[in-house]
Image (cartoon, rainbow, N blue to C red; front, side, top):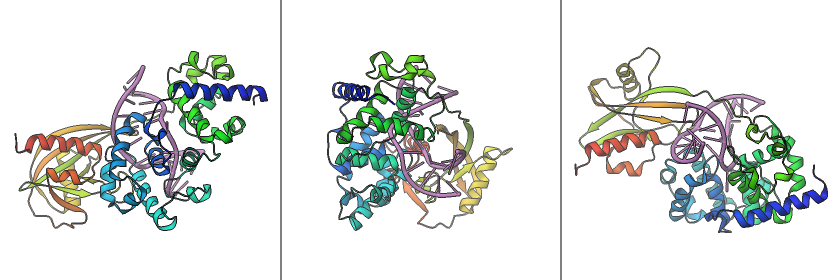
Length: 359
DNA sequence: AATGCGGGGAG
DNA sequence: CTCCCAGCATT
């Protein structure tokens, strides 16, 4: 803990640094709680640069809560396509309906009420209340956790359990009457100065208070998480009828829920690509394959694994019997109406080059 | 406490 | 290649 006088100095230096150095970002130029909410959801585990174009487009398509609550889920997911963590979009959509139906279209300003809404965890609840309504809630996110760990010299992994150690310290520095500015300042410092790699300690307004800088361990804090990246091979079938392609809808739970994809799946141990393709098409469509030809191969990286998609154009022996709720025949231009994972988008780009009429 | 959940960019 | 990013929900 810092002495009273040091606390004052800390706060003044942090806020002054923020006034002179912060980025102008669209969600900082507004007081509209809805816009701030949208930005907070999009920014979860997602960089500012990635979010910016999605944010602008979203507000154009869904300018207010009412509009969002009335939009079909597929339209909402399409606007989110490529942003990842699709549960966020579904929660945003669900919460908008609850706010319209139960809260007169206004975002609740009570902490417990707000946190009970889908997608509002501890961070987002405090962030919206602080940024939109200047309510006195400190936020804890990846940036602030890292800054706090360095200030305290905690040389360990950035696990949620360190929050318990940091909380009393950060709370003692918090400025309840300047809640919004304080939270923004701390996060911005983490993003611009106290970065994960190559922190600019020489420019840091808090250098004097930093245990890690004092001991030269800033690069060692937090300790990196060990990741084991798996490699996955998958096949998918491009099934063409007239000018249409067959796509299917993913389940509503789990990975990339409610998005659309081409039929197919993982290649199992000891299986050839062709064997996997025949097996998956038989499982999913109940049809055998007459002839197949490998069209393209795309790779796509996820946090936990890297997948290689082998796309086969194939002809079926039997016409499959399909449920229109989960399977559709769509033309090249109709792909625009369906949300796909980014790996599939790459395959669609290839199909467009191959089959577009102007070529 | 641990895991699942995307995708992109920096170094 | 590696790691991380304005986290949440579920177990």
